[in-house]
Length: 157
Image (cartoon, rainbow, N blue to C red; front, side, top):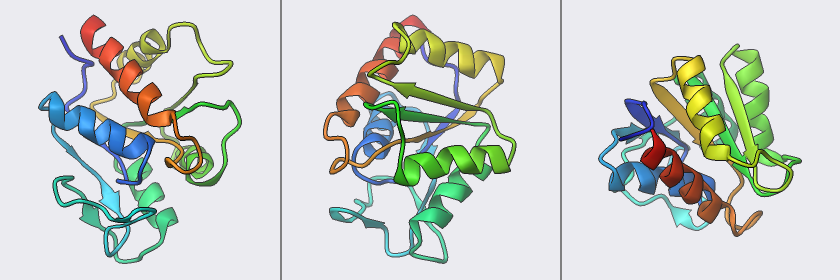
């Protein structure tokens, strides 16, 4: 069982990022990624249990771009279909770096997002998956959605 990736990366922000990193830790999937200098997040300092490397800048944008750049594909989770902030930037950076991208929204998204995820990983030969999405203050339920989809994909894969 598993989702077919060898590493999961994310930026460490609350919400989608941390849900993905927690999933990786719980399933013994190597994890990492870039975070802003000072391990900056909306709730303070990103805990050290997340194996993230600080960028030279405290810019969230640099962190977002470097995680897209250094992965084989990016997965953006959201509750609402319209993105803003760092989640929207992830899509822009994926286009800029010509990297595969999948956006899964809970509202208006596919009936089986876990199957879409597995297909995305397989079709794009993704080994290092970047996971992004809104922070907790923007979409409080996004972490639950991230965990649900990843767990289902893990059981199927």
